[in-house]
Length: 421
Image 1 (cartoon, rainbow, N blue to C red):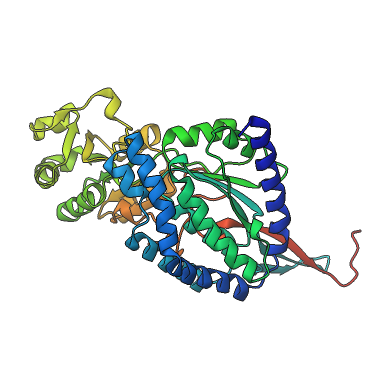
Image 2: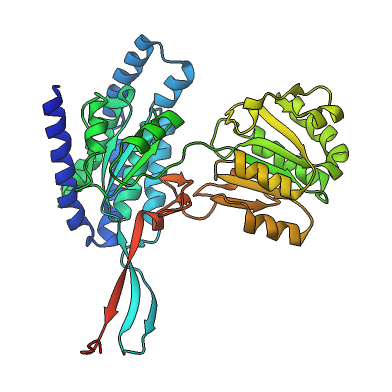
């Protein structure tokens, strides 16, 4: 497709999404829930047809030499379809935040002032590989009253179009504008640049993928971007931590799923407890296949550690690798986190109430935890039901973004003829 055709296609999609979003904002929760439940049933009914389209992507991926891991992420297996169906049903069961009114207060003038939750409007989603994100993102945006334009990776184009087609057919059957959910039908990266220029029609861009993709989107977008560059998460073992508790938390944070954004990448240990903590922790981690890259002080206690290079501090390994550093104080630990953290998740293990509270106040991250694994920073674990991503910037959300975070609040005023003096 020529560049002028790509531009006209994306611009028209954005314009149609804006129109559709205005109508969707007032659709009752019962109708939105019915769309989600009917889509779940339709996915099961049409899974053979979806599999045909998914096979085209898998064949093309093999021809391109995609790794086994990438092909696994790309495959819409029965298990993945079942997971999407379950996700749709779970989102349908969540309370609808749209229209919720809070904080009504009578002002001295006599007016009654409150705030009402309203949809953001139009969301642009740019993501890589996993086609199940198409359904997950569309479901959350729809429930929150937002239209969504989806631009998945070129390797999943047939799968993404097939999944969106199922949802669009259900929308039409309920009398709703199918432009509520659209997948950009071209794989040319020029479409992303055009999408990022549509500030007149799109309210928020959410990129999901590697750091390179997110930085490209943030640097080229004229639309506000939900940013989550990487997850460099740390556990700080305080001087009076319970050793066994600390080992359990570090093991879970590093080894349960090392390739995810809320896995631990750094371990900071107070010098006063290092002799007691590090030998047992290192033994457990090494038995689990973790390569430990330690500072000079930590290697003095556990000589089997690999010497850490300067580039290891603040690295998102996404693998069974952990950077280890002994610190002289909590001040040093907090300073290290400020320098090398990514504002994702930070953990303190301590028996001191005062130290725990100080860590909560002073550490800047989307989730700060006392005596709990970093792996809990997740929308489902936090009771949001589902999430569209994790924001590591503070406007307008910080941390996992569920339905409420896909809305904003406007002021509403009730009066009885009051005028300002």
